[in-house]
Amino acid sequence: MEEIINKVANSALEVFDLEDYYPNGMRVQLDISQWLLEGFLLKEKDFREHLKNHDWSQYQDQYVAVNCSTDAIIPAWALLLVAIQLAPYAKKTVNGTIDDLNGSLYEDILSKIDYSAYKNKPVIVKGCSKKPVPVRAYILATTYLQPFARSIMYGEACSAVPLYKEPKK
Image (cartoon, rainbow, N blue to C red; front, side, top):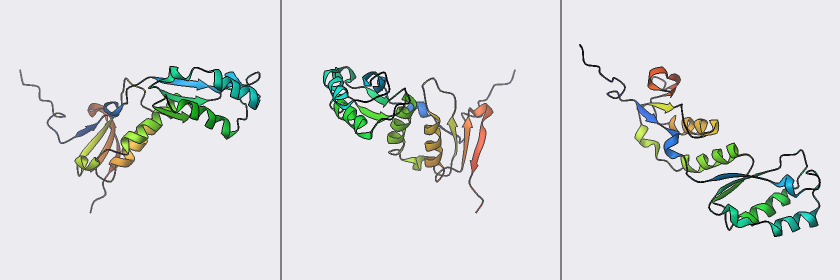
């Protein structure tokens, strides 16, 4: 019987796995509709009272996404007040959903990577992940990789989708 050779392991193909950069930490969604009259009307005095009485320490070292789950029209200052309350406790606060939060975290991380290690190499951006990697992170990764990589593919080595190939010079 012939020896099975792993051609992928022996190739120049570089795997860029976004899960390797996934920041650990608890993520929570904070819905401010709980502090609105019937979930829709912001009464400043009542809203400020709710903020004053809320236990902000429960967000210690957590990533927090702040949003309003109803169709209420929220003035910007209300979200700013929430962010100010969270500042001493939360690792990061964003306006939006958990997906927006994850996207923002990846934005911070991916902008600090040195991509020169991928210069003139074929790169596969690993597609399957066990962690919640948002599409936004994949877009950012390919944007950062493109000036360096000879080619970019998405997926797994056995079934990669070609995305980019450096033009012939």
